[in-house]
Length: 498
Image 1 (cartoon, one colour):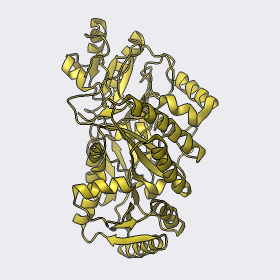
Image 2: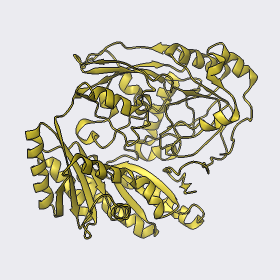
Image 3: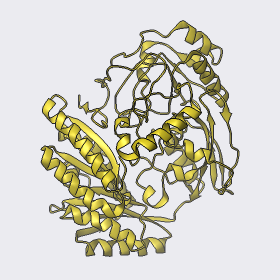
């Protein structure tokens, strides 16, 4: 990686932080700062210092220092975000919340959990399932992403078609505001209409309005049974149509994943899951509930899919087979580098009923710009990952890919959708936000940011395009990580396979 801010942190900053945290939790060595300067995009910038608070009071103390010195602060969970949200583009302080990682309480009577922001999502899944409970949000990176990061980015996952995303499970938040004030909410009530809903306001703001230091999360009883179905189609539009037909029949699967023809080529190449040779699209559907409900719903799903033109409907015979199916789906992101060395991945979303139009539009984009595009994603919500495969060394293809990205976003907005279904806006999509929200929406967002953070110290340069930021000034380049694993690129910030 390339250092993009000052080589050494200012002594005054380190001295000021030493009054707030023990020196052992203030890291200034170059190697440590490099490690905390990038996220899953592998875009990187060098922070001045990395700090590791262990309480809300310590987070508040760090933010008070930042306000006094006008130093940017970038909150960080596990760095698994896909839009550059935790990249310290203006240097300053990276505030790592990884040490605030305790599950404080699992309340079986009220079906809630109290957690710190650094808890790994999969750890909460295991903890609540051990006592017969269920936390539905399940991002693909659940083995490494944090609950605080999930809330900051409003993360979702395959099960959100039935159960909703993180936003729907946050009952209350504790947060530190940019000036160091500590906002707490001890309520664990499932209903509350007490003024403005600050928790829902902060969820999805990517650490630009406040730093989440505690969460009260809603839980559900663990479903008794789960059934996984693989449904193959010889026509991609028929597969897309089957999604809305299924839900129109009053069957809401807990997951409904889509893979196009190029995706299936990669799945076949890597083995593990048998796919019919004639298949041009595949749906992976899961239903859950009581044993009787699962049998009934699985039969209804199969019936609807056959009526829509499915050429094969197969039930996963065992839990191991179901795991292999999901492993194949999750392996697609890496396998796509066999198509081309650079991936530009967009997570667009449209209403379910307009998914066939989106699929057709993506095919037209691929043909018009002569670019291979691989599509898969959460079809039950109309949320597709559109992967434009190119070579970053080919200037002509990169220019065409940039045009294709903008045309894609314009298309999804025309289809009443959104430029981001689950990854957020962060750094790489900020320039495209006006396509969706327009001048007035952008102005309202800027006024909210100004009200919370008048000095602009908290995660500057994210979400809002063209904003001013304190600190070292804007970086003039972003560098990929030649030593790391390749990761998804976003909105033209393409990352090559090394």
